[in-house]
Image (cartoon, rainbow, N blue to C red; front, top):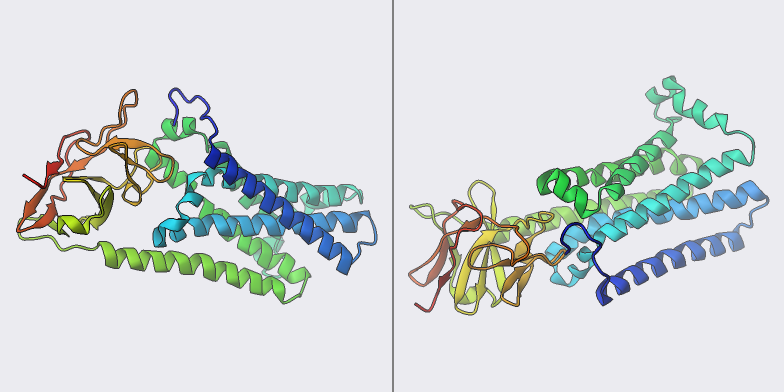
Length: 346
């Protein structure tokens, strides 16, 4: 993290992440163009441009599918958590690939001196009431504008300016971009090219994204649900059931998620939402005595939920106690920065 919105320095993990991402994207595009050109050699300049349009469009769609799959995969298995660390880089690169896809479409019209046809297609209002013949380019443009908005607000300046809840809500628009992209393909490429691979790919993408979110949600609902006792406190489990330097997440009756951490013989509870990007703190671990968010490494003290100096972020904390050998948490949040951790050895 950085103070005053200065650029965060690159580290080895960031460099490896981005290098692999760029290499995979480049390899996919080059391979697609090479294979398609070999199987179906383009006959003229516009045909070569069309090949680039399809290569970059498919790459952007697959990248968007992968972005929406990372979240539930990370909730299902911690092995996927490293993919979350620089997901913003993934999103920005997806916008770049999608923008190149759109630019090649404009180039395709330009080399044939038919640029005005784009405006005609987008402004023939009667076509918007049709299914076959719907101006699918408008759907792609809508998805591209959403990706532009998300890419341009990915810096921490906008996160702080908008506040984490608003910023996170804004970036949920990525699901809208995905929906528009799906319809863009269904009403565009799938209508002009009847190859069975297109509907199969579209269906597989939808099933993957929807299936992963449903499975992750069902698993979390079953794993984190706890009944409150007569006095309102929620049983978490024996102290040893909380992995050392890790957390168990419980759902309060109102839906708030609480991360209950254990660091040796110390137990404390904080909100599961990181103050940075509302990341899932309970999926992180305690490093150097601080709860460390798995998304971007923001840290908070276990005792009071405060970030170590010079940082000033504070988390809501929760009272914890040991009753009949069971760790229990009071679901009523304390003021951010309130000391609430206890020792289980006393």
